[in-house]
Length: 299
Ligand SMILES: C[S@@+](CC[C@H](N)C(=O)[O-])C[C@H]1O[C@@H](n2cnc3c(N)ncnc32)[C@H](O)[C@@H]1O
Image 1 (cartoon, helix red, strand yellow):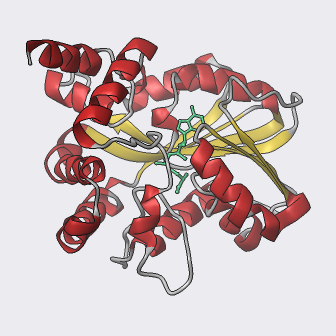
Image 2 (tube, protein in one colour):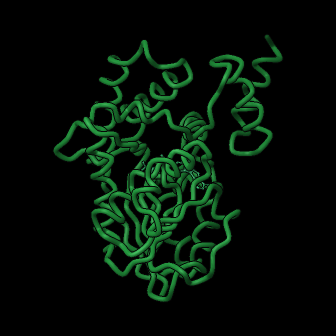
């Protein structure tokens, strides 16, 4: 028992490193489920079931005027698309595309010219390959991997988009540098993100709850730090808007109702995950986190 708790705390403390993630995955597998899925997998399909046609959103949602998860997911994508001024000539790199639902927005709603997608999740990339790729055929290319593992030609893209995923990357500021090379001159990086509300150090438990939710400490930045990091990587015309009022309350309300309704269908690992998200959105987000949209230009 002592060894178990020792491993638990070591795993929790070092989450985000390969040792910590290894220990953590092993323990959660023992405790919660024999077949633990990837951290990002297809379980969020459950959240989409209310629609009469299949959708596969997996983001926090933009809850203005809706209480529907798929509608809120779609709204967030559209907000980002308008903010990025998507246009028909755009060639897009989308990093962290979930199960690919957002390609319906970039290609089907904004009618951009072409999309390339990268996703670290094998399960989600396979889902997208099966369900979304055939719809858009030659307009879409998807890759399983990360910005570090996928090689693309420099200056290929007019826009790089990251929808509700950038805070999960191993190091946001390195990501800014890598995609700078991929952007054409005049190109734009646009993303949604979580920024820390305070300049003071985050309380220990908040910092580690965020880590448990897949947000490494190095990505726990304030808006000023975010702007500084973008401009250090060479970006200009940096714009940040705070959209928190349309994010956390609506998402919390949805999770609460979903949790009550679906408790018996959720595996313990998932129940824990949604329960932690519900606590976070209710008690911590408004105090410690801004949800923001950010865009920055390569001049
Ligand atoms: C919260 S989900 C958002 C999914 C999707 N964008 C949506 O709005 O429905 C975060 C996504 O980022 C992906 N992701 C996390 N880390 C990544 C990385 N380092 N490189 C590429 N994708 C990553 C996950 O697999 C997942 O698809």
